[in-house]
Image (cartoon, rainbow, N blue to C red; front, top):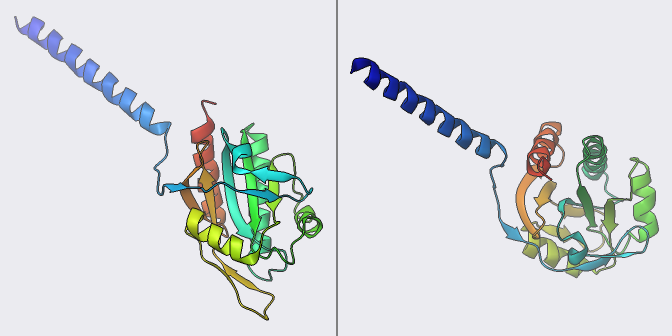
Length: 200
């Protein structure tokens, strides 16, 4: 009788351990979603003077940020970090796209954006640098879609803007945000992309 009860206990214990292992495994394939921002539809112009829309990005994870080429502080390291993410994603065979919105569209025409990005070894097969809108439009769009403050003061060549990078899911919802000037945050972003795309 004792042996029978002991045997049932061991079987129950094994079943519980297998259940917990399964739960942990399913959690490991997901990331903690920090935000949920629905990205509004857009159609802008990229560095090759091609139209790029939100619809073009549907069905794919993409990483977004906001930069401008005349920036003398955070934009060069942010763009270097985006180039690093792109290279690492390629090495890991991850199907992800990259989108940089210019916050100084009057100055940043397609040619200027491309010249700027070329300095960082950008690969334009899956990275679009966007312009083709007014200053008012991008300030409104950044606020409504990404909850990001963008502000250009008349008479000045610098633009105030946030340094966040965002992961946007295939449904067009921004799910996580990262500091675009931090190498540790870039590691976290890449780790999250690997988790999100490991089954794709």
